[in-house]
Image 1 (cartoon, one colour):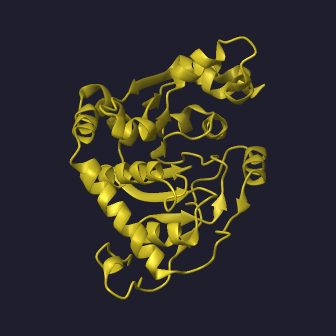
Image 2: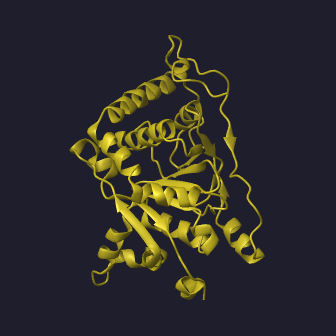
Length: 277
């Protein structure tokens, strides 16, 4: 059982037991073996380059995260954020993705260094508060190649699982899956869409991350360098329902600005056909 926050803030800076890492959950087999091979080619084993176990660093990080969660929890931003989730617009889409499952897994990609920067701590605090306050979020898996051993141990203590495979964003939504990806690189969103470029997979996805509408506007500039990274993002826009969040104040602007909820509703295979050619 994961250690609690209280366990991590005792006087001797101890973190009980070791930390566990998990492989991605197994889902049902893909229909085409070639698709499976492509996905496997893009995955590679991963472990923190910093293997040092330092209980005092872990205690310090946990204390920072506790303060961050308290700050977010008491903010007008979080109150407004929850109100938006409970509007019929978003709740209806969430219910459609979930049905008939009671919960959906959360996958956090690209969270960044929790030890070094506040913005990743703010983003993780939001994810952990959502897990606590929203009944439809299940297990949480986290990955970023920059995570340290301290980051990983604290994430495990909070009840998350740290992946030992770098999926490069290519997780397939074989079950209802909530991808929490604020401020990831455009290529990571594109990889995610490419790996799920099927009607049944896209309908299992909820994505919280950078606004696709903003990517579209950026791509309209002549010779925009982003064009080579957003092919699937632009193609998905015709069946993407996007709802931008309100950041309220400067406290959360840098960590969460231009973030949106994205739900995918392709009606026909022909809407996606040209990308499969």
